Length: 284
View (cartoon, rainbow, N blue to C red):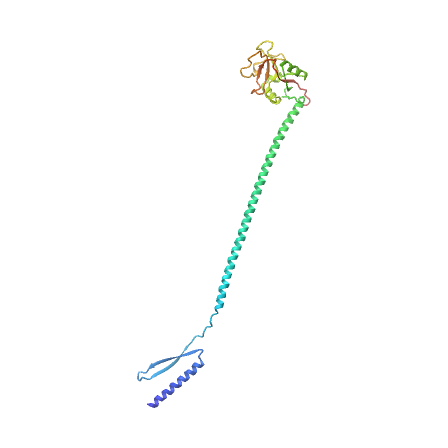
């Protein structure tokens, strides 16, 4: 019995020794776990060692590398943000410049438009002046062709007319017109439209002028100086005329009246003279 126990102890010692050797040999790979158990038949403790694979130790992480990564990521993000801000500023500057350019272009176009309108207005004004000058030239040419002298006007009725703004009596005015080769107006006064045309052309103010009509011989019977009696449709008297107030035997017309209406007046009063004489036609 004692022999068997010695044998067991010897074997156990060999196993432990072998286990230590194995552990020393494989310490980087294995560890040995000791299991104790009790035999059912006796109280002897048996030690059994078995191996468990131990994972290889991982190298320690380089914390400095993590810090660098964070710093690099932060700097990259900051650079990206700065780049975006700079790009936004550039685009905003371009938009502002484009808006200013557009505004300047609009202002220039508006200025050009206003200048064009002003030029058109000037052209229209010049055209009006040209038309007026052409009308005057045409009238003057017509007057010349009709044989009217300078300063005289003809309504194309074969006679020419001129207002002499020297104030004289009716008889003095008639002598003045005769000295100019004519007489006080008669022919042009019979037609009311022609009378108004002549008055519009030769009168320069609303001063009255003598014409060749009077009732010196018989009161109320007006006769032209060419000997013909006044017809009803020839007079065109001013309202409530003739009234023969104060021996009014001579007749004058006044441009201020609506249709150059006639008015009787004392022959001794002084008025302008409306002279008439034939034209000498010089062209067809």
